[in-house]
Amino acid sequence: MNTRSKFSVAAILVLVVSNHAQSAKRPNVVLIVSDDQTYTDFGFMGNKDVLTPNIDWLAARSARYVNGYVPSSVCRPSLVSMLTGLYPHQHGVYFNHPPPGFRRLTRSPDIGKAEFDALREKAASLIRSVPTLPRRLAASGYRCFQTGKYWEGHWRNAGFTEGMTTAEPSPGAKNGNKTLANGDVVAHGNGDHGLSIGRETMHPIYDFIDDCEDTPFFVWYAPFLPHTPHDSPEKYYDLYRDQAGIPKHRIPYYAAVSQFDDTVGDLMNFVEAKGLTGDTIFVFVVDNGWEPDPKRFRSATKEWDHTKRSKRAPFDYGLRTPILIRWDGATKSATHPELVSSIDILPTILAAAGLPRGQTDFAGESLWGSATGEATLDPDRAVFGGIYPGDATSLGHPERDVAHRWIRKGSLKLITTHKHGRDKSWGDYLENDALFDVVDDPDESHNLISDAKFAGKLKDLRRQLNEWWSPEVD
Image (cartoon, rainbow, N blue to C red; front, top):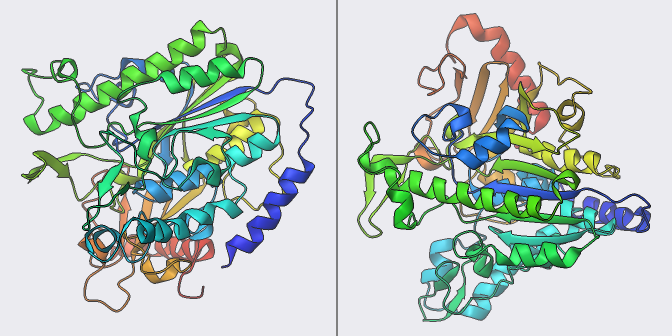
């Protein structure tokens, strides 16, 4: 599927037809993206141990979609799906690292900064031909500010009008730099200077909002939290030390969750203090799940690694996320149990801002009608996704790398396994296809694939999954 040529035409159309002289002021948009947090690890999602008072406060005032999913359980493809409203096999960024892969990019003595940057730029250029959310908003008069986690090179590549990430190393940065085998220092690729947001400062966002004055703005707030390294200030560790029932391996992660929660509160408080709450849409989502594994301690970094059922895996602990939408005076505080996807965020924001979807055939659906209480969601909707290795073997060929595809409809979730001629699938998460009832079996431990009672539903799920995307025929 050649998406680049298709969407480059659509991008031009969007820019041409957009009206910069809108008479009514558009709502501001603040998109908050948590980085590596399991869907269960919020107070409002039922966790009694982790402290997330600010996000819980946001949830109480939001339309709450508690059965949300991201298409892929690793950060880069998940984030690009939010930016584009497309699945990874459509937008082409189905990996974290382009060929020849992260290890060879960073440990080959013959690869210096110039070649490293050139190889990464080949992948970062993919998003330039897609009509992204910031590109669409900017065409309608928005100022769009990128901060935090962002893998697509310079902030301009995705259509932001301003930003923090430039694809160059940052002197003295705590995160975002990488030293190559030959000694050259490069931008790691996941956000460089932008990763200071939240962990070190919030002022770039505050200065941006102050400078916007009456111009509508879009803020991409995707801090490097609660992602590792779990090195939060001691006051966050103190929230959990000596608390009965909280195991030692969860304390660093919970501390990072609470640090992130504080920054969300600070951001909302700043918007309120500016008198902009009634003009601002807040959207919250997680890029992928993460949970610490007490059996996987990394001695080199002195941190616990994630469980094999969370990040990178085809299971719900890596794929599920709550999605929150708040616009005071417009949205209704309510819990929506229907299945939704992070690819719905782009069309939802466009609808809320009164902007057309344009000519692009987006896979996502607008949630705006349900968020305002004016429409209901389809209880029979299916959601989809794919799991890929972190390193791509080639660009433009997701069918060569896909390890799993999955579909959830109702309580049933089918995961297909693609070994590409090897004895084992990538990651060794599943040996073969699996079917789970994720309502009765949220840990996905009881495979129903051979249960005759589910034969009819299994056949229907396979058909719908192949209609969504069949890599064998691409």
